[in-house]
Image (cartoon, rainbow, N blue to C red):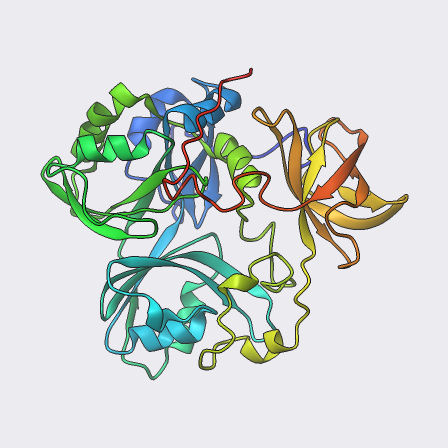
Length: 395
């Protein structure tokens, strides 16, 4: 039985003792987070903070929108290295990996043979024959190992952890923290190596918020405590603070960013959930290509605009009194002033402009509307640095 009933949820806490947490992994910055009163979910068998006792979800949201916020994520980087690394990734992902240049990233989605979605994440090309794949929560390692049989590629866990610095001040913080100033070039979806307090760190111009931002990758050889202390000093003048998934969740819904396992799953194709642009149909064979060639191109996932409440995850979406879909994500948007969410509809006939009734967190059934995603910044100009959008705080 799942716990997302809008009333209670099950999160991880720390307590004295030992045992039965052998398969769980703490982030290198766990001790930095501890004084803030973190409450964790388990993501890729890693702890990832949902919220903290020292600030509200709304405080975290506005920190992200107006200054800068850091999330120590549960993303799980895998390493692919060897002469056949590119060949294997091109087989596993729907996107043409031969087009990804060294020191560039790509959004990679993997499908099953029937076209159902397995996982998504960010591919980093560190060298001609070396990649990292920072995957979302999902069973991908064994899948990659199985399909890599017979190829000259080593698939390993480099024990790397990913953190995000996001918000309008994010690049100012990077410039202040980098020993040699802002790396050039460092455009959207770039990879760079920078010295942060004397330690060389892989960074990417990516994030999960659609805000201006970058991510840094903490490796086993790093002195994590010293690295964080250095970043903290650089970030404090720009309002940088650690926050959790609850605050980030609002912004990612506004931005139309999907969560693996809830917004898409093994039964949805990339086209069902508006990810068709990441399928390179004309490239050589990849897993799921034959099935996707015959799949409908019409989406079933749409945004929910709900003036009367917060859409409840897993609640029914009704059209003229009949169940026609399911809520996969929901939140109250402090910026937009209404409830936002996603609806995965049962049929393509229900699209933007459709009037619906949606189950909400308070138990009510509210009138709402299906809308196009994202809710604003349709061309993703904010994360590309082409648009400055720092809203006034309204709550």
